[in-house]
Image (cartoon, rainbow over all chains, first blue to last red; front, side, top):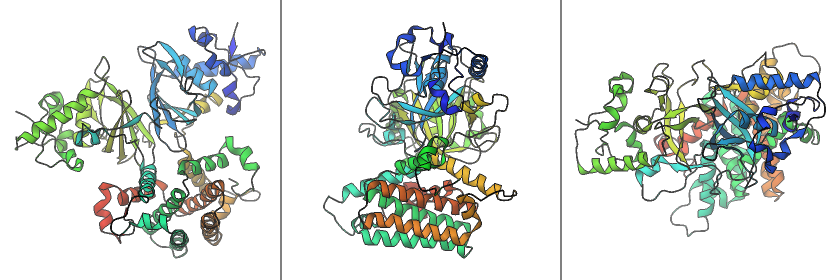
Length: 290
Length: 290
């Protein structure tokens, strides 16, 4: 008897009739996991297309350069923010399960079993695409997490800066591995928190903006205008980049002023311009026709 | 005789007198590598501070949960774009070298030697911070690449989409693992390229903007104004997010119109608000005082 994994394949533009038989993958101790049931449906349509799709999948799985233990490194990355959420290992079954269930799934080396991130916490990582590196021995699960990924409650598992540790090894503070945009966002949020503390000396520019909506809006309009003028007046590229940085910074202050996250802006853009966002896009005024 | 690694420690606010002796790390076959010479300076100041710093470093290196082969996974990530550039393995020496040289360095399992990414191509990855995960067995080198990371000339090593392969395994196209912002940027750049092709039917909104600077600038000013009004008129959070998405999209079209990259805008922001950017910031009008 064969099991088929059709759940995740629908958005690959593969019809639901195109089931994949993966008896090898699911005739393991993990078959009984209730947590992965959403991903597995019995296939009732055993057509030629099935074996075609099965061979496609086997081709891909065979092409991975599994190590001597049958593993490859698997890195989960937040599709919107770009944050590296966690890193684990995948074996053939874990990758096949991720492909079908679209939930980031790994192989636990300590427990010798598959595990889907979120099966306990419900903070699944919803995988939108999967990438192999040039050596085909390293995998990215590019996806959207339902909540904090780390078992500690941290957004990602990477919150220990070695450079900070070298400065003060005794006081190891939690500091997420933030890329530029989110590092800026974090700094702005900190400035907002500091507003409630008693202010000594002249407030910083960010704090002045956070305290004065009129000033903030005046600056956003001004900076947007200056960005436009670099195009209208054919100024240097460096001017455009600099003005774009200016307007983006001020816009981010407005987001922080309202307690909003840049990641949520990106999610809206993703809904608008990606395949998965077509329905959402169609329900809106057709502003962003690609 | 001892060698000291001081190059990379200056920006850790550790004085240049605080050398680290790492005779163990550099009494290997790799000592002779000319490519790593920039990172290693003979220490002439053997003070008590040196051994203090050495013990700090050893504490950090000891805290890593090296596997049975003495390795941990090391992932290089672009600090501005968030792109995962490559993944390799680090042993104790590779991590120590990265800490000191600030160039992403790995341990080659096939050649049983350290290697610094870029020692052949000169496309180094300049490491700004290093993070450990909660299990302390996975490392992020957060840095800025000097050029394409992949030996194929690709910006990153991850350009094979498994979902694409499942659709058309014979025609495996190169498609970088792009997060939302860069996926949008890539789509906009594609629309710009298509402008030269003969146009059939009504052009998309993006193409209309790319062809009409007046329209583009009018829209950026309008959308910036609409974003501001969500604050001034205390509209719903969802309105602010949506208007921010609108203005960001139009601003990105302007960048593409001018042939510029969003990553370079982020680099400017990083120079302005991070420690390493203080000198650059001071040379400008003090606009962004944190």
